Image (cartoon, rainbow, N blue to C red; front, side, top):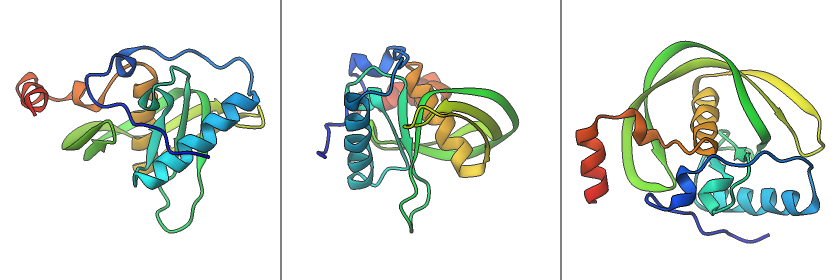
Length: 158
């Protein structure tokens, strides 16, 4: 395993729609383990493949700060959302920036795991927020796309 470079705001890969994964290969598994190491070493709650320069529909998430219990989502798709709530978000690709963002409190997401098993789970609160944030990355969207133009211009200037 090795720590990967996290791409920062302005890198073109962060604005591209990531490509679906057709098969969970040894390469994909290696990327997952490197992404997990990178996420943990960076104190992140989630990391999407485009954030490390890899345009694949893949993300890793772990919101349990006490015990490592990662979730690996391949080709995740949010199929249901309900109950919007406003809460602060940040992003490893935009360090030092935190903004209040409105997201669904409860979602249902389907994805493929590392064993190529189809999964469908209902998640809520922080985990729902992180899943939505990471799926946005896979679609070339950043959390700052939800804020005002004025605030976005201030961030660009930083």
